Image (cartoon, rainbow, N blue to C red):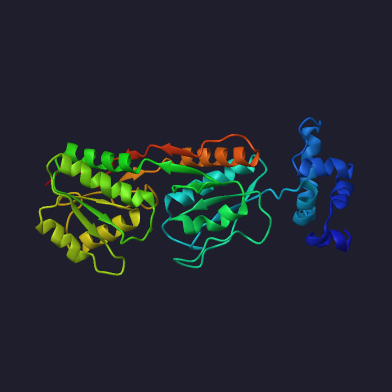
Length: 338
């Protein structure tokens, strides 16, 4: 094999065509998925793919972009950490979107936000659209709004130029409280983050739904803010001293903190304290007998976001937002008061 073929970075379509024994135009159609209406026998297609793999062929993205005026890439804005042991719903949505968009010849690409408060920036390479996660206000959407790119937001309101996929946070909170009320709980606390999510509508909607649900039934709300750096065992003790028998947490991160605090204090869950959390993400199903969750419909969210984005890229009419119901997933962390 020639040195040119040994160096994957220098392999071109002509090399693949020579090895497969076909015309370069046929190779181009197969590798660029432009063979609709162009008959290629399955065996020939596979021979071309095998030749490309053997040679280590990689397309010249810049040249393809210039030819097509499209890149085949969708920017992901809002990723903050490269590695985490615990995911959140947006990670699950992105996983599913990657598969859906790939079927349309699009691939997700991303840069990462350095830390809290850092701006969401588009990558320096060309993209055909964007999907935004963990946006907490207009500032996070400034760059993508200014770009005039088609974009969709996940679990956050979009600006005038985008479309959003939202969940029914109020309905989710009401489902959690109805579940606990049906078990016999009346003194139910709500634990949330200290404005960690800025102006995110879900933060306000859940708090309002929690207070409204209890007040409508003549029950006093017990809303507590949990700081990640503070010890949580004293909070759990104080809740029990106030007669609380169940807690709803804003995220599964907080649920893990409360479970650890309960373990330290030898407080049985759900024996003395029932727990329901938003976000049915790892490791909620794996902890103990499992944690009861209010789940985001991540499959439906991914399908809706992909559809909105594809329609906008193609210039087709789309709704400005889609709102999906959340789903209660009962597990072993919630039971009748002990």
